[in-house]
Amino acid sequence: MGTARTKDAADLSGAHRPYKASGAYQDSKLHLNLFSAELQRRLTAAGRPVRSLIAHPGIATTGLMSHSAAGKLGHALLARLNNDAEHGALPTLYAACQDLPGNSYVGPDRHGGMKSHPRVGKPSTASLDQATAARLWTLTAELTGVR
Image (cartoon, rainbow, N blue to C red; front, side, top):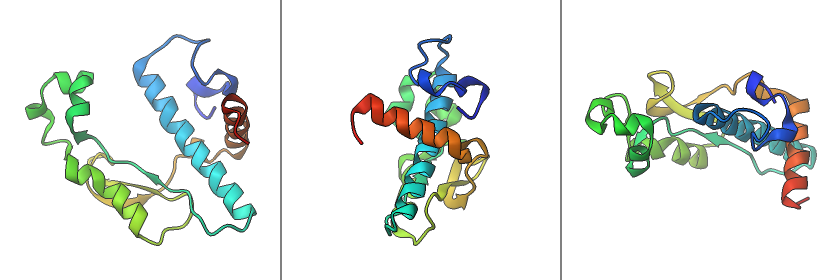
């Protein structure tokens, strides 16, 4: 799609390339951003007032984290670098409650966008590729049977 790992929109599952957990995670986040951009483009074209927004919690120390490689290193070591669960929820709440333009990206404002209070940021260049976003939308519709 927009990166070296995601150039082939037909291989969303990664079946035709070596699996790497971090790469699959990165691909899923890029796909989410591409899908959001295409949804917003379609909403705007249809004259709909609904907005598509992306909210990123940063890294939040939750029970889910204990299943990750980083979580296995110990929550105490990483707790200073991560949001607690309450701060992790703030970007989603901010996106839901503020009057933001469509396709806005909301995430933490410190430590490389991983921790602290929410701020509106810019989507990555790769996630703004309209042709890739349209291909992803079409393939998703085909795979799910939803038009």
